Image (cartoon, rainbow, N blue to C red):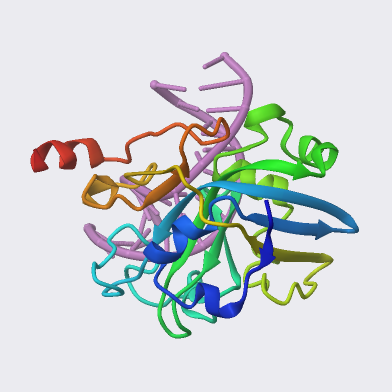
Length: 220
DNA sequence: AGTAAGATCCAC
DNA sequence: TGGATCTTACTT
């Protein structure tokens, strides 16, 4: 399994294209000298309003550029770190060209290195260590708002933390399905924008977003 | 100004 | 199933 550093150009494409290519790769962070390597096992693509072939009503960028989602509109390769439900710092890899909103949410991973630190940060163990975007963010050590916008291509340090994205060879068994917890039509099979490594135990359980199950029923 | 909901997770 | 806890968007 040979990994290589991601380049800016690797991410200069629409999220839907980039997302599956992140599977099997790693997010490597160093927090106060402590390194953790997370193998990415589950991701979701998010576009912006009118971005790409399909508009994305489930994205933070659906209403246009705001202070919160500004990172999503910037240079690819930075990390969009947002606060979920006032509690969890979740991590996205920004993609698409500068000026176009796009990101890939890192939803789950397995800890390759730094297990002790990961356990200390998440309070969980085994396959649950980085299962779900909240735990993934917790284990990575990246925090909202101080690490929002950190550059995962250069690995430059920001507030005592650095982050690097590494890519693997394409994963053979990739599964797709609706995004987790996304409301309404955007959370249905009409947007199969979630990608995961088939059979990996760290992949998070599926759950419908508010009104998404009803919207799906209408499609049938 | 008030309120409802959110790319979540945990304990009851 | 509800609470934690903060931000955004929409309503009065």
